Image (tube, rainbow, N blue to C red; front, side, top):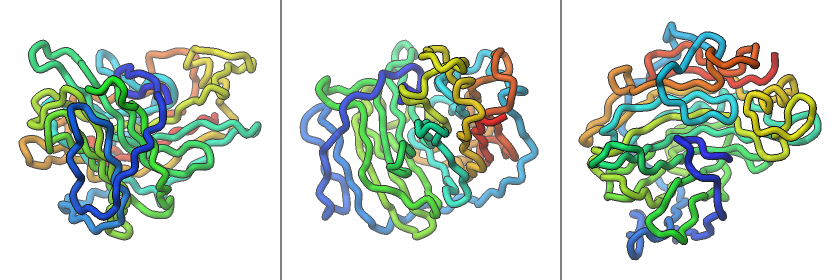
Amino acid sequence: MKRKVFGCLSALLLLCLLASCGEEEPAEESGSGSASEIISEDKSESASEPVSYEYDGEESFSNLTFSNGEGKMGDQDGPAYCVYSTKGVQAASMEIELSQLELQIYREDGAHVNAYIFLGVDVYDPETGYWKNCADAGLVYSGRDGWHVFYNLYSTADPNASTWYESDRRLRDDHDYRLVLDSSQRDGRAVLSVIDITSNIRVDRVIFDLQYAKADGSNTAYLTDFALDYPEDTMQGPDGQPSEDWIDITLGNTDRGIYLRNLRVKNCRVTRDGVEYDWTEEQTANRGIWPDASMTGIDYACTRVRNAKENIAYMIDLDMNR
């Protein structure tokens, strides 16, 4: 996975620290900037009950009709859709109906793309306001490994800590999930929780270093991101030759059977000062789509957003077939 949020670094080594499974609460990390602690335990987790929004929004658009303009779009290496919050957010959550998703990541030659569904956070310098760090955390489907948790960091306080992690726990694709990313518990730390809302249990949780982040949310902004990403063996143009141009690579993978359809996302929420709010336009800095209508070369709707109700509930199709 190339960095998805604001140009973060490429993945490093896989993190291999597993947490003990007998603790209800995560243990504190030892020392400044220590490596992450992973907790994967099936325990009931009470979640606040947001209003259940149906997919009855009237707004729909695609990469042929929507232009990013001056808005940020950090995910520019494959079909993708992002929603960015304004600053001051301490946590974000969304519900994903994996049970309704249609996914095909394999080409006819056996090579595959990777699919991502995740939350992210951008960290800003509290004095200058400039961007300083970021993290992505959520679900990835890579090869035959099925859906599972990952995270990717731009920087860590410990220079020897890994910036990439993938869980070995596979999620059921006939269940639905709530993802919660939370940086409010302590300065410099974030927690991703994955709750199986079909079975009403927490199925995975990961705690990681979020360097420079303030727990009060004063220097953090969150995002949602949904994307298809190209491993190295799929980075060719239509002529089959290696390429580093993302439009060329997208065309080289067009009409080869790849799609992520009917991704249903709902109950998207952000937390400010400990209070949860629906992810309305008021909570939104901008939306970003890749490609967008300002780009030339891709002549079909490979990225579509349907039935959007502000940024609370929407449906996404990443379909690389004309």
